[in-house]
Image (cartoon, rainbow, N blue to C red; front, side, top):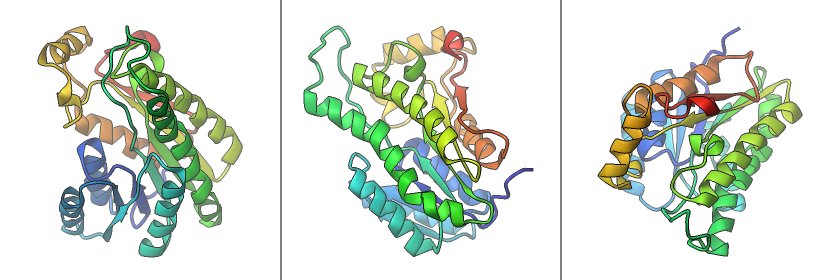
Length: 253
């Protein structure tokens, strides 16, 4: 039966900007208390916190570097302390740097490692730290990651990003069969999101992506956020991916 989001406690990593900010306010509208993770800029996080509180829920900010597993684990602990519990983790934060695929050395070894940490090791660490709390919850818990269609195609901001997002997709499946039956693990794979980050693509590249999509537009942020809500509520789905990309990569769906 559908999972009732009212009153649930949610940690949103990278929750102060872009899709993460929308996820914070979207789950607040569902009646969830939210922990908004940020790393560098507290002002946007405080703004999102105020918006969530205006919706009648509790909201806190949690500073943590989501390229570091120790920091990720601490963020879970701090969320539990500040909100009094934890029911849902939205592992939204990731890392990449725009770089040329044709140049196999355009990303350094340390940048490959940073991609691996952010996109694979940190989601695993978040669930590892939340697992005992989820298991103790009467209704269990769930984690949803923000993946990317780069995981199922050969494109994106960088080769390390595509490779590690593909690994994250496999991680979601492996975790799902490991931590059930009380914990669900799923992922959402967006296409082109015109966030602060997505708008760093050249205008020509953005238009090419829109033209290549079956629906001839970018992935709308609200549609993407709705997929997270659906997965959070659906108690019959785990180990699944929901691809929200305006038909940009139908073959990989």
